[in-house]
Image (cartoon, rainbow, N blue to C red; front, side):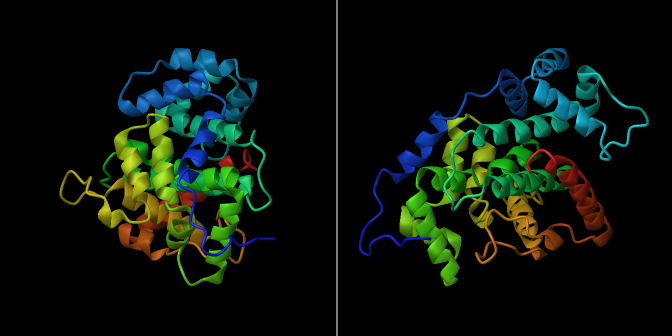
Length: 297
């Protein structure tokens, strides 16, 4: 049951600090994840060293072999070597897969309140990461290499609120179910801040590149994102917004039925007006999502 906060009670000034403190209680990034995140800033990463590290993580190694032998890659023969799998995936796909699986394993170590579903959060996040990345591969997107991690972590602020501030989280849900205001307005009223702000600060805590922080900060208001560096370029915040809306429109949502969320598929249609190209992207999205889904059920 969702219990309303007492009327007239202002949000405590340290609510954001309490939510961010939850990051410090998570396990530290693995050496594999640390090396792959470094590649986002252009640092060279040795496939040989990555292979050595991944071989020591039996769960991750097994998952990567499962991915490279899946319908996504349609290999004629089974790949049994982790080093071979790493080479075939390439740095971008490897980074995406390891990010998705490693970070979700971190979340799953935390107890969750009844109002929060870690499974829905993980599947929504991975879906947004995959679609954002596919769009960035085909469109003139600023900081396109950050599309997957931006899509993957754009809603981490909502998770931090759900885990660290369950009472306030339930109050936000109650206001959202009334349907008169959007989620951002409800968060501002109850918390005094919004989940994009919190998500961006969390990514800053992990020292992710500034363009990714900016994209996550503005993923509900890309018109305020002034990071476009060339005429005709699409901002990363626009890509994440379109991916988030499409994913919600096909019912891959953080929230259970009854709570409205940003779900306008026309944003994707406007971004990719060519119907054939859009169909190709969405077909690839479904294939890749279906492969990754097995690791988050």
